[in-house]
Every structure is written in C-alpha cells, then in structure tokens.
Length: 613
Image 1 (cartoon, rainbow, N blue to C red):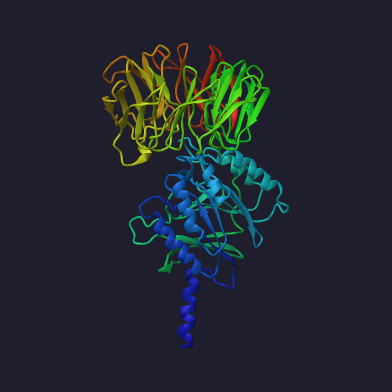
Image 2 (image 1 turned 90 degrees about the vertical axis):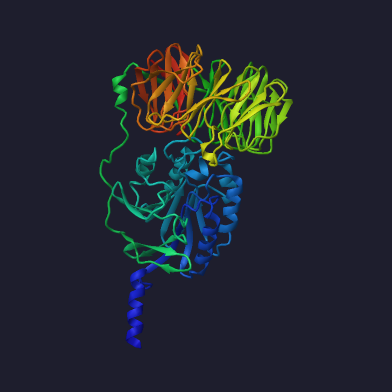
C-alpha cells in the first residue's frame, strides 16, 4: 500500500512542478471573449475552478476579455471575474480596444486601469495594453503605456530583479512597436513574456527571450474550455493546461530561468526608403506622451490636433512651437472641426467642447451623457455629431445651442459624417447607414448591409458622395453605392482580387473615388459613372494594409496613409508613385496637405510632423 502511494505521488508530480521546489503558482486566463455564445459561461466555469485551487496565488487575465469591447460586455465580464477569491490583474486585448464605444475609457473605469504592476515573492510583473485603440491595424502598445513602462522601470531599485512581462500580443512584428517595448526591457532580467491572442498554447522566441502564448478560455469545439497554471520554481517556469473541473494536464512546456539571453542587434524597421526621396524633409516634429488617433485641422496659422491623454492642442504651423492647450477628461479620437474663430471637438468624456482657435479658451461645453468617438461634420454653422448613445445631434457653433437630436441610431458611431445635398450621411457599428435632414435631423432613409456580424459594419470609413451617389466601403470587403435621395442600392460589389476595407477618398474635382485595398494598392473609380468603372489601379505595392485613414487629394497628388508609418504620394492621373516617406512604424492618420509643398501628418504613436518636399 505504501509503495502504491509513492508511485501515485510521483505520477502527480510529473503533471506539475513538485511542491518542494515551487516558489508559487498563478493562473493565466486569456481570450475569454465575453459576448460570444459561450464566453460568459466558460469564464464562470474557470473562475469557479480557480477558487477551488488552493495553491494558486493570483490570476492574470491577458486580454480579449470581451468580444466587442462594449460597456455591457465589460460589466458582465467584471461581474464574473469579481467572484474570484484570489487577487487578479488584467489588461485589455485588441477586441477590448478596437471596437470600444467608450473610446477605451470604460475598460479603465470598470477595471481600474489598462496596465498592471505588482510584485510577488521577488518577481516583478508588468502588463500593458496591446491596442490597436479604435483604429484597425496591427497591434500597438499605446504611447501612454510606453511612457508608463518607462516610469515603472525607472523606479525599479534592483535592475536584476526577475521580470515577467505580459501583453495580449506576441512581442514580434505583428505588434507595430514591439521594439519600443523590448528595447526598454533589454537591459533588465526578463524571464519570460506571456501573451494570448492566438488561442493556442505555443512557445516563442522573442529576440532571445522565452515567449509563451496561452490557449483561449473558450471551449471552441470542445465541451469545456481551459486555462494555464504556471508554476515558478527555483530554476524554471512550468506551464500546465487546466480543464476546469476535469484535470490538470502534464506540463506542455518549460522555461529555464537561467539560460536564454537577449539577441544581439535584432532586426528593426528600416527607414531606407527615405534615402530614395531625399527632397522630402521633416521641417518640425512633435512627440506626444499619448496616442494620436485622428486627423488635424489647420487654421489661423496653427495646427490643431488631439491626443488620447484628453488634450486639444495647437502648435505654430511654421515652427511646431506650442500655442495653446485645453484638457478634457477623456481620450480623444475626434478630428477637430473649425468654423470661423471656433474649433469643435467631441471627447470620450461625453462632452462636446467649443474652443477659440486663437487662444484655446472654452467658448462652450455641452454634455451628451456618453462617450463620443466620432468627429463633427459641418453644415452651415451647425456641428453635427453622432455619439455612442444612439443619438446624432446638431449644435449651433456660435451659441452652443442644440438645434436637433435624432435618437434612433443603432450601435455607436466612429466616423466623420458626410454632409451632402442637405443630408448628413454616416454609418454605425450596428450594420446600418443613415441619411438625416441636416437642418432638422429628421430621418430620410436607413440602409442595412444585412450582416449578422456587427464587425462588418460600414462604420469606420468616412463616406463620400457625388451625383446623388454615396460611396461606402466596409470590412466585409464590399464597395457599396447608394442613391442619396432614396437609400436604394445602385450597385454593391465584392472584388475577390482587390479587397477594399475602410480607406476611402474623393478627388478635388469629384471625378474619381479612391479606395485602398487590403493587398496594398490604391484604386481609382469613375465617380460619375452609374456602374463600377475602374480608372486605374496603382502599381505601388504597400504590402498588407488595413489602415482606415481616409485618402486625400491636393493639386494632382493623392496622399495615402499607411499602417506602418509611411506616407505615400501618388499621381492622381495614373496612381504612379511620386514619393514616399517613413517617419514611424505605426498607423498614419489622414494626411493634411497645406499647400503644394507642405503637409501635416501624424501617427498613432503620438508623432506630429510637418513635411516639406
């Protein structure tokens, strides 16, 4: 009997690190996707199971907590996670941030923060957001999180303290600014980098250091989901998959704590394209401490812009020197709207702000009750703004008085509406596209794409219109043309060789519609034709592209923003390349031409610059 017991004990220790060697154990739960069919139930089961595991010290949730990042999904996930009887720490994933009706504020409101730092038995744990925040593209650790990481590392007293870093994404080129993180961690004692995102258990090498991807908590095609239990011993990390209420499987990977060293001279993004076009020069550049997720406005000799620290700022157009700053209480993703001496900016704090373009002083402020992630459109002297609360409203800019309020929008609005022939046109993340009377707010018509998946909504692109035709593109890869008088479909086409998505524009003379494809080409269509007619397809290969930034044209040049920090200047005549310039490795917002030789560009990692060519 005694020998049988010893055999069973040895078998059990093969499944998890022996208790005599274990410093501590923790659980990593990832990709819970609350909001999907089984997300909440699978999370409930895991939480109950963890509560029964007496040797788990704490729990880390490494992103994609929800499916769509909605306030409802966040509150539901929090109500389940709060049932844990152990300490827990959490960061968002791309599903929590890309489609956020709150502009990524509610995650912080519901969970307290979007980063974490804590110590346990000599180990330092650091976790950051992976982005992309609000704009479709590769992942990107937000600029404000990079600043936060600098602060955490600066106050670390023992530079040899072992660190475990957590982010939802793998720390490689799938994350636009992976190197910003790794270069900061490079001179520290990093033992492992943990992630989710891929929904499977998988071991990686992140520039010489161990990277471990953990499985999704979702059951997928199985009956029960799962998570990982990580045992920290004196010399290793051991990863065991746990099926809640059923079994803890044999360790599927181990990480030696004293072996791996950082790779020397790892590859970094190349800026060599700039040597090909030396005439394109940076006149000035501003580096913000937060992300920039919108286009800019140019007025009164100033560049007016916003950031995700909640600031509306103005700098001198010629020098880049700061002119004024106004702070709001929420992240801002809106492009400033200028009318005469006023600039109107909605904020995710739920308010609409009207400031002086000269001084930045507040002219008026109007509440809406919920975050606004869209930009304002101008109709006469009205600022028309669609929010996240199902409303589209119009304010008189000089007085701040509300002129009308339409209250039947399905889903939240991200776009900048188009005002055309007395109508305001916009899409929402409810698979619908609206036409309202711009003067009264009365509905003219509503169009639906008929999709069950809200992620296919015609919501992120800025619509364009001409000759009573509204042009839309959307993530379902369709280009759709609607009659602006009736809302009826004129044509709707999904090109299997050229996948349009969310980047759209129109020529100055309104003769051409521009669309960027996911294959990395720009296409021009005849805007005057009632049928789909391709004018040209640019020979310029930009690589895989899902950046939604609108396309601008000025004086025969088409300006295209890329998802990896490149501005492309193409000929409006045939799409041939005029020049390219790379100033970041992150998503570029809409490029704003100032004149024939000057433009303003910005990127999601907080860079604002003036280019001359």
